[in-house]
Every structure is written in structure tokens, then in C-alpha cells.
Amino acid sequence: MTEINATVVLAKCPKTKKLYGMRVEQRGRDWVRTWAFPIDEQKAKHEGFEKNKVSGSMDAADGYPGCPHCGTNGFVLCGCGKISCWSGGNESKKYTCPWCGQTGEVKLAETFNVKSGGF
Image 1 (cartoon, rainbow, N blue to C red):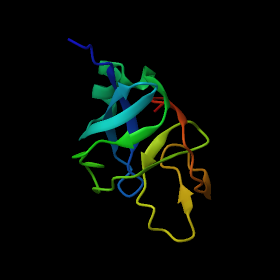
Image 2: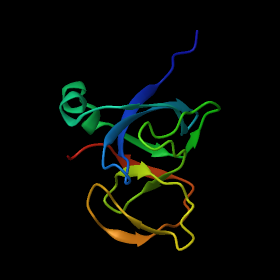
Image 3: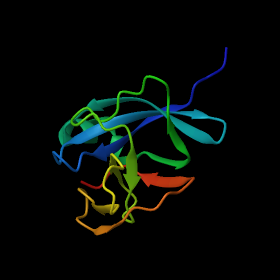
């Protein structure tokens, strides 16, 4: 039986500013987003989710439900190292991070270094 390496990284919805957890499962050197669920900061801290880090790509698995607050399936990584959902529908690709407030232009990347916490 093959052991599954999975963890939860935290993300925020820029539309609602609410926190959620993304379960990611390692497959080779990459990660796959398999589930997402709403969570509050106190519960996330209690579970230690703010300490989790992942590196590699983070594709969505078939059936990945997307953000539990707005339903968006995509995500963006800010320069602060944290992630949030992103629909990609904004033609100007301007984005404001719900974690740190930085505004910038979204650029596509193949791999990521995500740090989960730091409320």
C-alpha cells in the first residue's frame, strides 16, 4: 500500500476576506488540490495549518470544489508567499492580496513556494 503525503495550506477569498483550507496531496514532486473547506483563524491555528509549506505545482484534481466562499477554482500566489482564490476573469489581471493588501499584476508560473500562515 502506497502512503499518501497530504497537508492543508491556508488561503483567503479576496471577495469575502474569509479564510479557507486547501487539502493538497503530493504526487511526485508536485501537489494536487483535492478539497477546500471554510475554517476560522482560531481553528486553523489549533490545527497548526499556518505552519504548513509546499513547493511545486498545484493543479486541481478532478472534482476539486474550488473556494468554499465564492466557488472560484483558480488561485494566485502573492509576493508575500500566501495564496488566495482567483477567477482569472479580470482582463487587466490586476489583483489585491487579501492577506497583505499588495496590489499588482498576476503572472503565470509553473511552480510555487507557498507559506500557509501568519494571520
